[in-house]
Structure formats: structure tokens, C-alpha cells
Length: 350
Image (tube, rainbow, N blue to C red; front, side):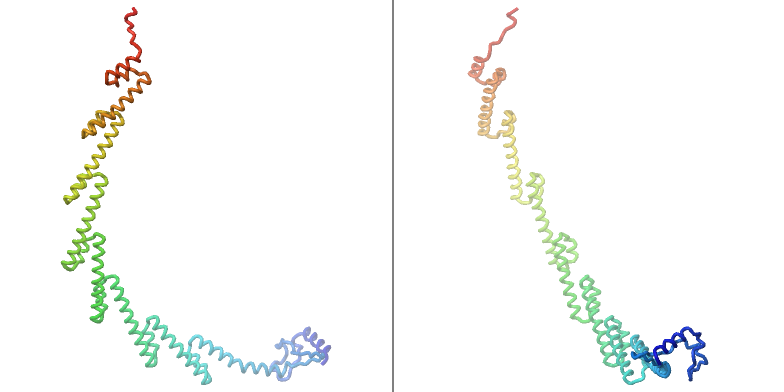
């Protein structure tokens, strides 16, 4: 068949109504009207063409139809295995190898589920999944270990929060009870010491169990009160509040210290005021603060020096009236009269 023949046939078929397509022997259809696909024709490089849409096509279709159920079975088997649907997977098995593969995967999945249930603490589920005796023993041992660990954890928690009754309730041996008693005793002793350190002695005494511990609490309380008294005593002395310091004094030495501090403070104040009145020239106020003949002589000497300086000053500015009021001796008055102008008597002029 030539290429030109093939092209002519193709064009004729494409433009001719469907019912004019020729019949083939052996077809169930009476007409080519229901077969709308074109003939399968292969053109070789030489230009020749060959129509093989008859026996070869039918053989290929038949082979595909025979292979399709097996393909579907394998796909559904794979799907059921992935979904862990062992019953349906086993229904689709046809070989011993497939049955063995299903059994192996089911066993592996069951073991994985047992491990997950034990990890989650669901031992009822794990025991239900266990089939072999060793698996059941393993689940029972895991449950016992988990229960023991939980008990130990709760015991440690009750000790931490100081719940003695519940901690003892979690004990199952005398040794554990003894250990709980020892730990709670250590916590009690530490708590008593902490309360004493914070100054909460009434709380500390509530947790003291014997006279010795109560006596220690009293010692700590007395020591703290004594330290507080001394601290306030020193504070009042530093602030020169000698009356309050005297109220806190308890010993002869402390009373003597208060007296000495007060005397020293008063003497310091007296000397400061004496110096102040002397600098201001307030002789009478300064003289009232003098307590010894030496201070009186020194005050007189200082005041005399101030008087002489003022006298010189008044003479320099020719304020003879103030100079005379400052002068104390006849010589000073005579010296003022020599330089002072004579007084004018106005009544003699009229």
C-alpha cells in the first residue's frame, strides 16, 4: 500500500459519514457506526504503510483485560497493609509469601502498639494487645516499674511540700518511713533556725520540740534584743539625745558614757557660744559663759584689745563722741580733748 493510497483513504474516511465505514469480519456490531476511532496504520520510512488494528489490537486488549484484576488486587492489598486492615489484606492474599508478609507486618504493628501503650502508661491496652507469654510478662513488669516510679515521685513531692502524713502514706517499708522522719526532722530544725534568724521567735518556739531548743530560741531572742538596744543606744548618743540614751543604758559603764558624752557636748557648745559672743563684742553674754579665772582673764584681755581698736578707729574718723564713750582712762580722755575742737557756747553771743 503506497503513501498516496493511505492519504486518500484517510481523507475519505475523515469526510465520509460514520455509517459508511466498512465492516470487519467477526465484529459483533452490524455497522461501523459505533466504532468511531480511525484505523491504526503505521507508515514505514520507505513510504509503505501497514494496518495492524485487527488481530494485534484485540490481543493487546485481551492481555490488558487479563492483567487488570491482578493489578487491582495488588493495589488494594498494598492499601490495606498501609491502613493496617489485616482482615481485608489477608482476603486478597493468593500466595504463601503474601500471607507471611501480612502476618509479619501485623506482628510488627502489634508490637509497636504495645510499646506505645506502655510509653503512654496505658497498660490495660498493652496487656490486651499482648499475645505471647513473654509479651504479657514484659507488660506486667513495665506496669510494676511505672507504679513504683510514680510512688517514688509522689513521695519526693510530699517531702518537698512538707506534707508529712501523705509522705508516710506513700511509704511501704520501715526504712522508707525512717528516711521520711529523718528528712522532716532536718526540715524542722532548719525552719526553726530560719525563724530565729528572721526574728520570728514565737513561730520558732511553736516548732521547738524540747526544752533545749526553746532555750536556744530564748538565747537568740535575747541576743537580738541586746544587739538592737546597743544599736539604738549608739544612735541616740550620735544624735546627742542623751535622755533617750540614758533610758537605754543598763550598766555603770553605759551610764558613765552617757554622762561623759553629754558633758563633752555641753562643753563644746559653751566654748562655741563663748567664742561667738566674744567675736560680737557682747561682753556680758560672754562673761556669763566663763567658768574659770583663766577664761575671765583671757576674755578681759580680748575685750580690751577690741576696745583699743575701736577707740583708734573712732579717732581716725574723728568721731570724738564715740571715742570718749569708748575711753576708760584719764590719759585717753585727755588725748581726745587735745585733738577735739572746743565747744561753742551760743548763748554768749546774744
